[in-house]
Image (cartoon, rainbow, N blue to C red; front, side, top):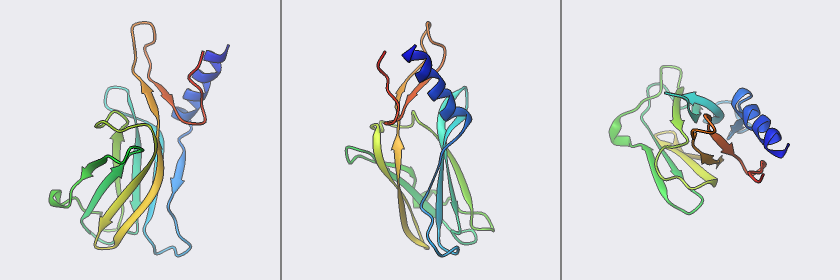
Length: 146
């Protein structure tokens, strides 16, 4: 019965993505949204990072510092990734990217508009198996005990 509840909660995260925001009171400030539970290439779960008010065609860097202090470089300034003409950029990242440790992480966006960061939670993952053809995604508010 508990496993059914956990499966329903897991589906809830996939079907109803969560938004976390680093929004400030000034609407012209850089805004960072995280949308959890999206599907990326071949049914791999992940999340979308959406940055707004970055400035027209401004270069940005994107880093994550995981719960153990390891730095993961998603986008380097040398890659010349720019926002669009409206100052927005959207990036999809699979949860399986790199060796990110589950827990509370810091996401940093850096460039000409400054350095902006928000906390995000990285879930614990269990990949599909022959008996279970779906990913299990465990956030801190869910339990993976049977």
